[in-house]
Length: 89
Image (cartoon, rainbow, N blue to C red; front, side):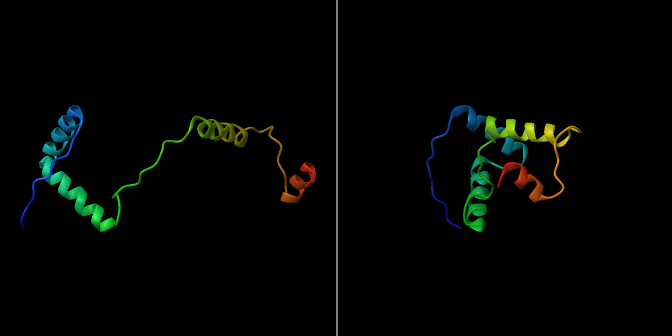
């Protein structure tokens, strides 16, 4: 297998921490990049999910829903029609 030199720019602290991590795993930074690239090709994209953390609004809505779900005094409906009737739908 022939190799080729590639230059990339990295934040100095990020490179230092990543190098320490990969060294602990028995890999050089170059080997870790090779693993990443091979996994990317195998997955036809990034080999992990890239998502945004939930918004403050979503977390607040989840918290509110949990409180309602555990509130013994919360209004409940036996059928969807009961809810629709109350909402005038």
